[in-house]
Length: 203
Figure 1: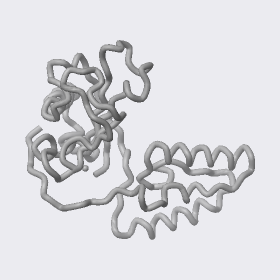
Figure 2 (figure 1 turned 180 degrees about the vertical axis):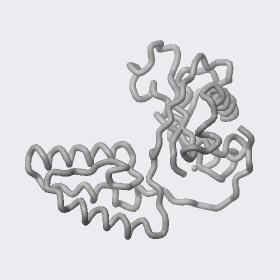
Figure 3 (figure 1 turned 90 degrees about the vertical axis):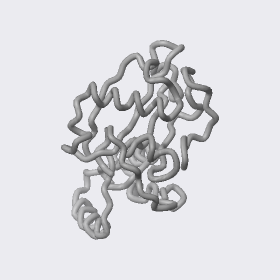
Figure 4 (figure 1 turned 30 degrees about the horizontal axis):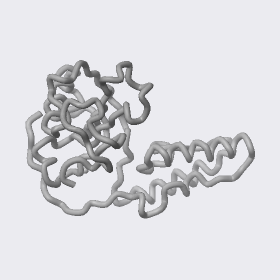
C-alpha cells in the first residue's frame, strides 16, 4: 500500500502467459492506467503490480511459483489504509482474478506492508516551497538528499539509485554532481491522456 494519490488493461511491455502460470507476464511490473477502460471495473485504488520472479529467480523459494506485489494508492488513516490485513489480502486476490492473471484460489499466502509518504504530492505551489527547502539545504556542506522523499520528485527506482550514486561520489571523491538534475528529462514524466471519471467499486 502506498500513501499518495494509472490504458486499458496491462501496461506491461511483454506478452503474458495464461492464468495459472508462474510467469504471469513477461515484464517485471505492470501498471493500471487510472480512469481508462477496464481498470474502473477492477479497482479504484490498484496502481501497479510487480512480478518479483522477473527481477530475479532468487526472490522466490519455489521456481514453480512467483511472488506478486500489488500496490494500492491510499491516504494514511483512510478506510483502505486502516482495513485489516486479512481483508486487504482477500481484496487483492479478488482484484488479481479480475485482471485475468490468476485465480484467487491460486494465491497461497499474502501479507501487507503499509508505506507512508511513498509518493511526493504535487500542488500548484509546490515548486515555490521546494525552492525554499533547496536554498536552506545548500547551507549544509556535508548533507546530500536523494530519492523521492529527499528530492520531492516522482523518480523511478533507477533515477533514485543514480541520485544515491551521485551523492556517494560527492562525499567520497569530492565530486560536485547535481543530484537535483536527475530525472528532469520530459520523456520520463507521465502524462494524463484523458479525464474519464472512475466508477466507484466497493472493496
